[in-house]
Image (cartoon, rainbow, N blue to C red; front, side, top):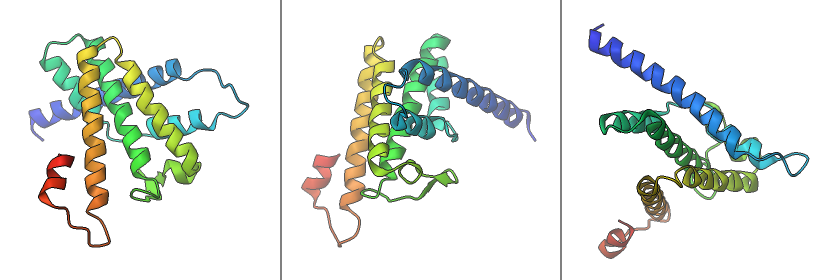
Length: 177
């Protein structure tokens, strides 16, 4: 194994450890004390966000932040928001109205573990948490909001191009783009 690959694997492991810890801390700060005896939305949000994954987007955010000279706390703040936005998108993507996935990362998807309504609310909650996490970084917040809008457009394009032999015309493709 080459030295570069060993260094990459060590850096990746360090990033994942940092991201997991940062996500856990952030979620603990975000989640309010349960106002109902059993807060299914909080549990479903935690299940969707803290249930593992490659954390690739967050790693890229950390690396880009370092390369751009951002302070470590700011880069981590952005990475947490990016990963939280990604978790929201996966929860919604797995819903029956979208891809209807039964599993995610080898475990029941959020809507299968809980129910459809709870999954929708958990995804919405994570989206809100992601945006709020960048409230003091307006440039990063705008970039995250635009990324989220692009994801929604992409999901709509995906749905429009599935089944029923739907063919998108150029004007529709340009509008979605």
